[in-house]
Length: 400
Image 1: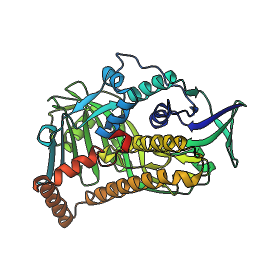
Image 2 (image 1 turned 180 degrees about the horizontal axis):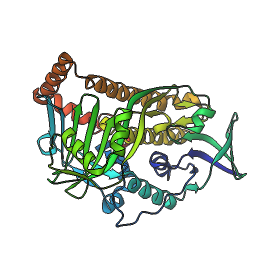
Image 3 (image 1 turned 135 degrees about the horizontal axis):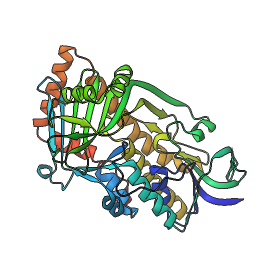
Image 4 (image 1 turned 90 degrees about the vertical axis):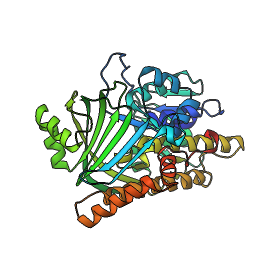
């Protein structure tokens, strides 16, 4: 039977970030992952699932020693952002130079980030990766948790971390209640070629019941789109022939980058908001999608998860350094309070934003257009919005 200090269930981006962050802390770490990633091919086309990595996550990935390999593989730096309300005057724009930054963030394929973290974790002497490994049972003892794997293997850990995604098996086993709501939106993702270059600007347009984001990729004429639509409409757009889809996309995007042509398959997935009642318990901590999921309209999901990992790294190192029991709920409450607060603010903000920009009521439309215009022109508002989007207000001390 293997015995470790921290068992991380889920070897996705967030789980691996925690594992790499604990290297050198004196804690023995095991990562349990059901599927080892398929190695990336250099000339493979851009993957459909991408993340808008903000400055806070970039700082974390740099400290973990994986940022240079991510950027060397494939990452697109963006220097501006534009948001507008279709068929109206409401608009706000940001650019890095006027705000005193070298860039606003990067659009990176999830698989590129995951592969870099996976490779790094394999190089960490304090980290052992068990893959494929699937949990069959977990029992919470007074001094340790007992994990039984489907292949018959057993593991004990002083702390078990649930990083096993939105439908977390571990969260369910621990009977942690979940607040969840259907956004009544499905996200359609695809790779699009545009006639005009995207100029490294991320763009987002709100239109009645849909939200369309164009995220610039490394090729100046390629963008990854996330199109949030009512479920029936999303299915229609997924099934439509390429010509009809391209035409609808150009109209929805106000033809901002000339003609658009879909260059990939179109994937659709439902959007659900989730918020776990507790982010920690006896010998248990939750992070990433196991603790919370949000609407992708601001592209903040993985950034929120990375800050969970950064905060938990900080707390576990502090507790271990002080000789305290890292699995005691009373000690994990500091992590829980900090991250529940950040997640709640983000969830409430996204929900408010989504409510404000849905529907066509003239008074509501006028209100949001004036709001966008004021945010764009009033002194001091945009820098605060930008710091929030870049995650600079939410950094753990060790990343500042």
